[in-house]
Length: 140
Image (cartoon, rainbow, N blue to C red):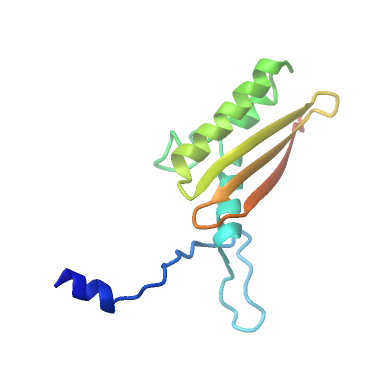
């Protein structure tokens, strides 16, 4: 019986569509409904949101966050760069199962009081890499 079901079932592979609401809450100009981001854009938005989140910032999830903004106020040295990479990799690995990290590059700019972060990752069910660039600046 299971052989017959497999023979008459769909043979093409099913692909998942990942979708999230656009965090800018932009409405569609014609329909007026909220625009959604799908697949690569949805995961990219989620990864950026996770990186920018501090601990205790989201209600009922105190352990969700990266805490990378706190490291901007530390004295610049190579150990801080490695700690930033580790924090970024940890938050993506724990809270974004749709992303598979390929490379994390942190470029410290101590004279400008900023850090440039480049993350290259793969979205599940997609063979092309996604590159996310984030610039964090210290304003105080």
